[in-house]
Image 1: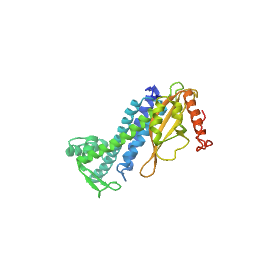
Image 2: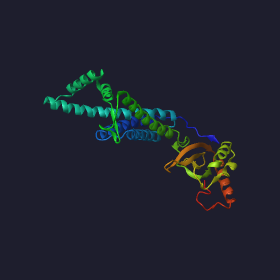
Image 3: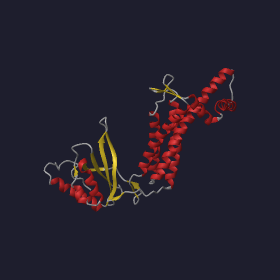
Image 4: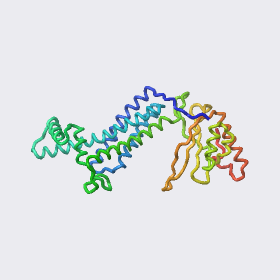
Length: 316
């Protein structure tokens, strides 16, 4: 069985989708979090949320633009994450400027125009940090430090000095980037039919493989020993963990190659189910029919298996 490999193609419309959603999605998400953070900011949770929304925006762009390059997905995952986190701090800078303006106007007893207000802020940041504008604001915020409490930054929490504030911001950025990149790269690696110019459909269950037989099953499958591999597939597993075996077909050309997707199903310490990818390969229509027929024959010859179960003999 040959492994599935994306074509690495990026249509012109794909670039448009990626550029539009990376900038727009990142700016909207970052600005929204900055607005909410005026009242509450949940440390680590909000960065994870920003990473998920950034990854979702890039994933939509990849799917809509039919982007089949994992490298491009990775790059735009990074870009969207940077824009999102930059927009978050930019939003905080905007709201800080508004608060600063209100305080100054109240103290002077008169309204100041935008240029005068910017000059006053720049003068203050220049004096405090040696830099002006957004960079001066970031340096001043880091100099002030963060205070970590149970619900985020709070006055009665654990104070962080300037150095640790920068470190924490880097940790937040790393969380955002990691989630965004993983989601975007995974979306670009999804099976795509180059003939019909469309993504493959959702997986349909073929069966499961017991954990103690998984290594032998994978070796026989990769060696194109289809009939032998089929003997390890059962309608459903009795114990966890196990392998799930699904097939995915292009909705347009049902006689074309079929993607065989193998995932490991396990449970974490909380008893929550989780899937991790194991194998993604291509089988010809003849091979997938050979596999399902061998599964049916193997299960009918085993008196312990109820062949009336819906998963026992999938149709092509």
